[in-house]
Amino acid sequence: MSAGAQKALTFHSSSFEYRQFLTAGSELYPYFVSDLGALFKGDCLDVLLDIQDECVDTVFADPPFNLQKEYGENCKDKWSDEDYLEWCGRWIDECIRILKPGGTLFIYNLPKWNVMFGPHLLSGGMQFRHWIAIAMSNSLPIQGRLYPAHYSLLYYTKGKPRTFRKIRTPIERCRHCDGEIKDYGGHRKAMNPRGVNLKDIWTDIPPVRHRKFKSKDRKANALSTKLLERVVEMTTEPGDVVLDPFGGSGTTYSVCEAKHRHWLGVEIDFVDIIKDRLESDEIVHHKNDDYVEG
Image (cartoon, rainbow, N blue to C red; front, side, top):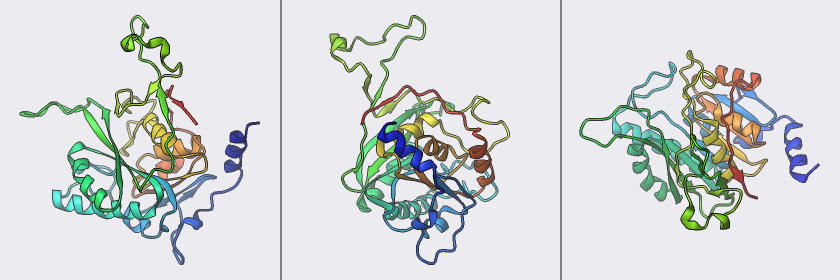
């Protein structure tokens, strides 16, 4: 058995000691604990205040987009622009505090909001790494504007990144003839056989619409496991800790379980759904042919 496999088995052999991440005297108690992670029910700001400084390796945040959507009864998605930015600034500051030096913060949101978070992140000592465009043409055209065709994934680090694992994606092939789409300037034979370096435009993230991946009765937001797998694989090693303060349907936690990462989660409305989905292995993972180096 390889050292990596031995390490992965070790993580599954004992219950997750969540209290090591809480402040002294904290009365927080998780709704659900697995061998790798703990899920807390409540407002993320209330929970984050009880988490210690500099104790997690990566934060992935997918907050409500302020689109006046209906989620659960406790989730607010209708703010003035000023109030929304102020609220986001507060949980972003807590996430920065909780990150270890060299840790990574991802924020998944509309370009409208993410472009405004940049100055706040820089003033908090974070370093810009990438603006990742997630191609997603699932909205209607807007009169007088370009057709919106991507979501934004901000990628910042707390100083020099401690972990960056190179990801290679398969060379694209035509779905009709199965031939390679590009000739790469005549240098195809010199390319790495495991694929091309991951770009900052992701056109291969499938939307979560099919009933195989999302129940028609579930209001909680759902992202593709492929997106979260890239986030987790790129910036953490097995045994590292990932925090997601907006649990939604639990995709981040499912990916962490599959990839042998510890996790801390917060969700205000759908903790029962997340618990059920994790315990029943209901979350179906999308096909992912990425190759992770290192």
